[in-house]
Length: 325
Ligand SMILES: NC(=O)c1ccc[n+]([C@@H]2O[C@H](COP(=O)([O-])OP(=O)(O)OC[C@H]3O[C@@H](n4cnc5c(N)ncnc54)[C@H](O)[C@@H]3O)[C@@H](O)[C@H]2O)c1
Image (cartoon, rainbow, N blue to C red; front, side, top):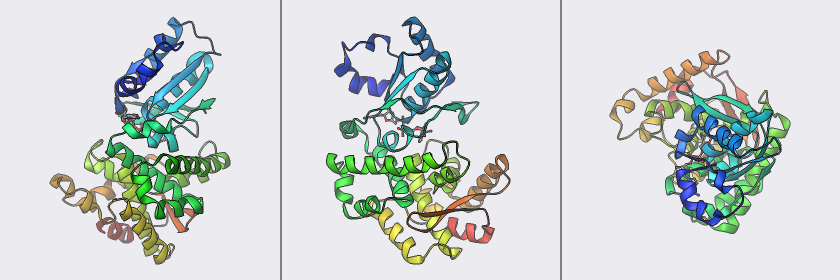
């Protein structure tokens, strides 16, 4: 299973390989994550006479990986799954942890399952063809992961930012492997997201609200996450949980990679309708989100590098001040 872009980029090299004639080529990006894609993939598998010992192979970003994994998880109650993530985000995040899914009824990941892949290959060379925006978006999740664990990864990202930004292969091999190590340790402690796995949402309460206020799809997820990391540090510092020195260190790291570290208005510049009363609108989205869950807005905060806590005791005035920057 490819999307239009990954088929164009990587298909020719696979021509003649057994199974390639049974391929599905989905639309590019989030458009691939639809129920219709699951039916399309399943139909191809039936036509190819695939049994439950047959392999579903995904070559693409998180969207292709998520939808292929979902199709594999329900095909004959579970077929073999091989993921070949081709974006930085999919390498460090979507390929590990077993979450699968498609968007449904206008909502992200509404239908899905937990189904870890049987095999994952990481084609690091694929990073070279990624558009700059997609690469930066992956870096947002990389920075988040580095705050959660692995002191060496955190150090490496600070001192080798040029190598990381220029996609140096050896450096990125180390970065990707270390990110997977951090995520694997968290997922192993909490495979079905009832506890520590929430740590992986560091920066995400802010990020989701920003993405929604800006208009879905206008700000890349990883860019929003990077901004959310800074806001989480600022909030932690206001609550006297995060030492100012650690907050400043993280802000420096974010700036080194060119990510925004100020209030929401900075990121919404050029979108006057979203920028007006940005803090009010973000708070509104956060409150709406909270209703869908357990009734309180939950923030992932840090006391230090690799020392993470989840808190729902956040006074609104502190939150508003942090959103305003
Ligand atoms: N399952 C999980 O745990 C998990 C974790 C994080 C994100 N996700 C999901 O991943 C999706 C986002 O993934 P993404 O950021 O990889 O986006 P994506 O899959 O939409 O890919 C982004 C774009 O890059 C193109 N592309 C892919 N590889 C390329 C390459 N090597 N060179 C050039 N272009 C290439 C794609 O065709 C697409 O247009 C979201 O749907 C998100 O929900 C899942």
